[in-house]
Amino acid sequence: MFKGLPLSGKLPEMSHIQDIAHTEAHFESSNVVRDIVIGMADGLTVPFALAAGLSGVGASTHVVVIAGLAEIAAGSIAMGLGGYLASRGDAEHYASERGREEMEIVDRTRDEEQEIYEIFEKYGVTRAESDPVLQALKRNPRSWVDFMMRFELGLEEPEPQRARQSAITIALSYIVGGLIPLAPYMLLQDGLHALAASVVTTLLALLAFGAVKGRATGAGILRSGLQTLLIGGLAAAAAYGLARMFQMR
Image 1 (cartoon, one colour):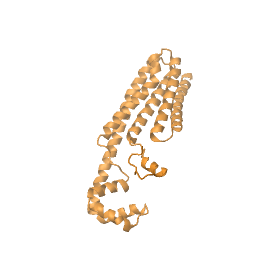
Image 2 (tube, helix red, strand yellow):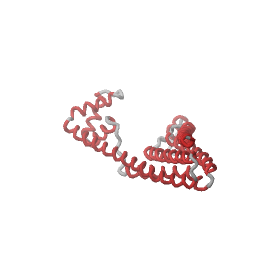
Image 3 (cartoon, one colour):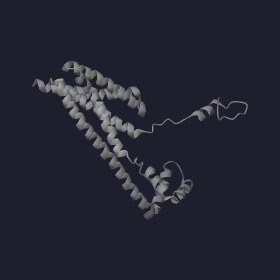
Image 4 (cartoon, one colour):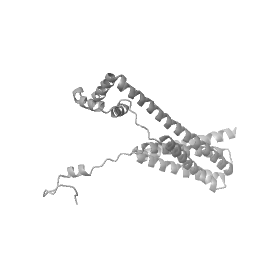
């Protein structure tokens, strides 16, 4: 039953069993989640607000669908390109800083050694205690640079295909999110019925999306769901209200 435990005639204390069974449950795909959140959140909100605004001026469902699809196409390209450029910028910044650190451990060795001591001192480690670590790092310059990048500059090496993956993930998430508020306009002919169905469908999607995001990121299901619902609802209400206001003038 307790595979791997010592057969000493008695079971170990429960706290020891819990220590053995303990596993870390940290989320490892934060970049992917971030890209999905960026794309899906905007995809749900912007086309939803556009459709609500056009409905506010009495546009037909046909016009709403055409305008919505055009917005989704433009928005997904713009968002994907933005994600690509941001990731490329992160990669270029990392490469630049790494090149600088590689030169500094050669040209300014004393200064870099002092920085090692200062980093450990922040964690309450004395110079005498950290000196063996420094000597080990000096024997492996690559590891020394890795250490400085992580603990001095707080930079993690980007994934090789990060820029392309980010662009694709954001763009696809935007498209999926944008089609949700437009679906009722594609299926219904009456503008008011389509608007009502779009409101219900999108608000439920925003609530569900926010809850899933909260579960994945650890931010809390209820809090994240309500927060996402509120933001999307306010954006659509503002667009619809402004459209109605200008129509009345």
